[in-house]
Image (tube, one colour):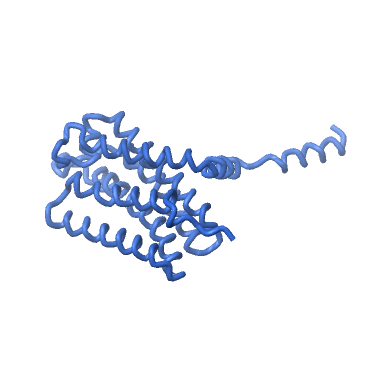
Length: 223
C-alpha cells in the first residue's frame, strides 16, 4: 500500500465516530424528537402503574416481589422505566441548554448510572433474609435504591440550577420532589417495604418531568 493510500485510510478512520460517540449521537438524535420522548414518558408511566397492580390490588408487593412470579414483565418494567426516564432527562437538559455547568455534568453521570442500576437490579433476583443469601440481597436492594437515587439526583440537579436563578415555579417543583422523597423514607421506616410507598416518588417524578418537558409554563423563553 502506498504512503498516500495509508494516509487516506488513516484520515477515513479518523472521521469515523468511536462506539461511545456513535452512541451519544444516537441518544442526541432520539432526544431531538419531542413526540418520541413524550410517548416514552407516557408509556413508562402507564406500564409502571399497571405492573404495580399485577396480583397486587392493595399495592403491598414491591416491583421486585412481583418480578419473582413475572420475571419477563419485570424486565419490561426496567425497560420502560429506565428508557423513559433516561430519554426524558436528556430531553429536559437539551431543551433548557443545560450542558456545561457542573450540575449538568453531575446530572448526566447520575442518569447513566441510574440506567445501569435498574438493569443490574433486575438481573440480581430479590431474596429474603431467610433465604441465606445476604450478599445477593444486599446487591439487589442496593442497585434498586441507587436506581431511584441517581435518577432523582439528575432531576434535582436541574431544579437546583433553575432555583439558583430564582425561578419560583422550579423552586416549587424542587420542594415537592424533596418532600416526596422525605415522606417515602419516613413511611418506609414506619411501615416497612410496600409497593405503594415505593411507587409514590416514581409517580411524582413522572409528573414533574412531564410538566417540565411538555407544559407551557415551563418551556424556555426563546430569545
